[in-house]
Picture 1 (spheres, protein in one colour):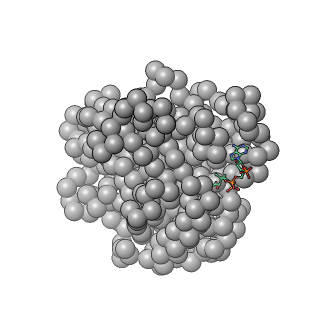
Picture 2 (cartoon, rainbow, N blue to C red):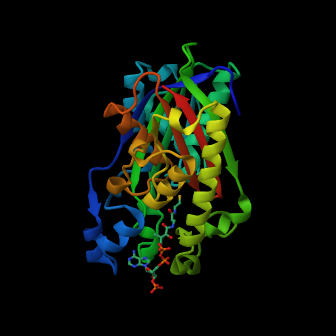
Length: 331
Ligand code: COA
């Protein structure tokens, strides 16, 4: 919804990606695929894969430490730690509590949210609401995903798309200079859950030898349907976020979309009227890191100097649920 004045702003970002780079050619040595097939359909050329010993909490804490340091925020000052992940290290307790312990955010309320690839925007939206309600001054939003642990490495149409990584942002009340979150438009539709899901492994369909043999505990996706829904939803959310922010396409200095597929991004940008020169792309190097994609891209764009003071930035995301959303910020 539209804010007459921004209530909260991103004051810093941080990112962490595992060092192990797996290229399309590396995958082609392991399965029946090719660099040509993957890159022409998705734009992805490589992804990072975390080792067994590195979990979602480790990666999230690494990204969050950088964001906190850049914001000159002591971990003890964090009031709320919102962590989005589709790959928690375990079911109980939350990965947010693990990250809280790793960082020493002793005074924070910490919890996980599950909104798949839209998780970072959902988390930011919640952080904004928490700050706007006056419940705290410092929010830490962390998105961390070890997608390599939940994809089916025998399903070439899905496993080649994803990668591992984490991103984080520190959010504080806006200081009145006009910087901050201008609009936030989040949506979901549970009727389409089966387009992108893990059918088993929770309490509804517990793990059994049969479930494991069928790989029902791993990611299943109807790629073409997901593609169509992603373009439609991200386009609609982008339109609403711009409208609610009182911006038009020409006002956007940089678009930092969820990095799932270059063709989805191109179609969304085209619909919004934003030229691709103004769209930040890093999926060629990382693949789809689910909810970590946007904060990692945002952090890279900021570090490269592509986002300056007063710039309007637009993000849009889409993921399992289905979930989707878009946000506009002024930095
Ligand atoms: N390497 C080589 N061939 C592959 C392959 C791979 N990794 N994966 C699938 N194929 C084959 C299929 O078996 C199929 O072969 P067939 O025609 O002989 O049956 C062929 O390629 C075409 O498959 P199809 O699914 O029609 O391709 P597509 O053009 O729809 O592209 C996706 C597939 C997955 C790249 C595309 O649908 C997509 O990107 N969807 C969105 C997925 C996404 O981003 N999800 C996350 C959202 S957050």
